[in-house]
Image (cartoon, rainbow, N blue to C red; front, side, top):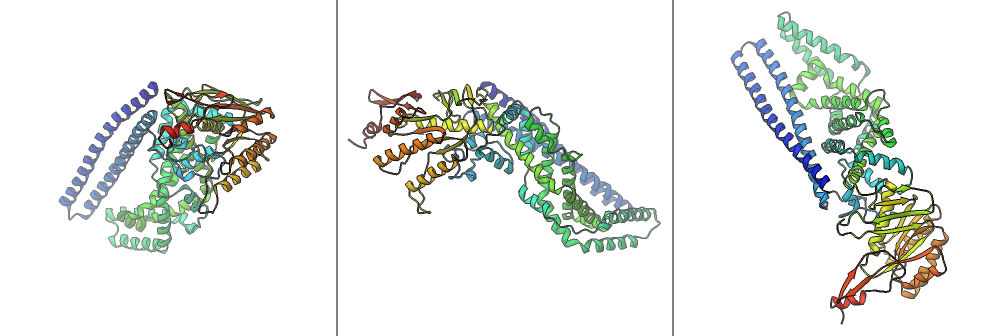
Length: 590
């Protein structure tokens, strides 16, 4: 913990010092820009009356001012990136101290009908997603959520290798995240993809050459005018002609400009992210494959995207009166840029979806790499195909305080079921969520909260938090039956690890006991694996008849009229319940 804290503090110090220097440079840049403006204005005032000289001075002044504006913008970007890097390390410092509730909770990803996400607090305040998520892009957040709920057991080894590699690259991860956080998009990547895929061109093919010809004529005319060989009226005629040609397409150029303006910031930042990926030599198979997806154009994708971003930015200059007047009047820039944009869309538009997905993948996997970096004592499960489904040593829940969490060892074999009994608050539900989350984390490729783990990949399905629905006129009992029916249907087609917290909670004790027993027998007959927590001690009797069943428990002791828990996972059946004691202790009953 101390080494991690020191790393993040050192990063904060480094970025703070760099930030101070950039702010000084920005102040100097602002002063120089002001001086250039004053000098240009004063020169024009002194030379007023000499049209040619005034025009030349104004032109030089404008060029110098625009150069300084560009340089100032670069410095502002550098400042913003340093601020982002500083915030990233400040966030990690807080998370190390278990202060993470300010991070996005992922409430939008909650799904009560999902295989397990609702039961194990995967999303929402205080959830594993909130604890793990460091994504900077909306699509990256969606990708990370998708990884958590995917319930896939494919390519776990490749996932582990990719996450492990990224975990050793903390500064690279932070650089990527900082740049991604500066992508102030005005629209979603989905909307951009839709725009590119459905775009209808309007610029005629002759605009490939006409703007260049017209520009050459304008430049030659200006040169002849300054040399005294051409009357100023010719320049006026050129301006009128240029406006006339551009005016035919003004409405469509304006519409393209509006769409381009929304997409420009996205492409401007995404080309930087692609460049970061392109410049990195990855070793793991999965990361190399993802990188290869953006290197199939024969030209770096970051360069292709940068060109498009520049074109979109050029078209956006039509909002500038000076550019609109001179650029379109004398050089047909609006039409030339629109033609180039359309050519880019025709050639690369269909590829943008894959580029966006690669960026989102890295944004999501950076969260996984950061989680691994922050938990160096966690173990990557050793994958096997033997009879052990999950064996963990010193297993705990990652959201519990590591200094207070009680760790347990357990092993559950293929087609085996644990029935867990125990007193209230003794640790049954926490254990169910610990095991469930270990399976989810293992399938994602993450290390689990254990010193050692062995795992035979399996999909997860749970029923722990069934609720009634007033809006659907649905009782608690019927909701539970639907969930159990869902489980029965799923285990017919695939191999699952099943976690249940009580069965048939919504019915009376006698009916519950009979129904629970029959359901357990059905699960065992389906050759599934899993854990069932219950307060019904009669259900433990099934272990005498079915060798696949093992009884385990968590208990509590009353010492000096106080309730004590050891939270240890034990073999056998719990004999100590505490409901009556708690009712009396809290003075609810006599």
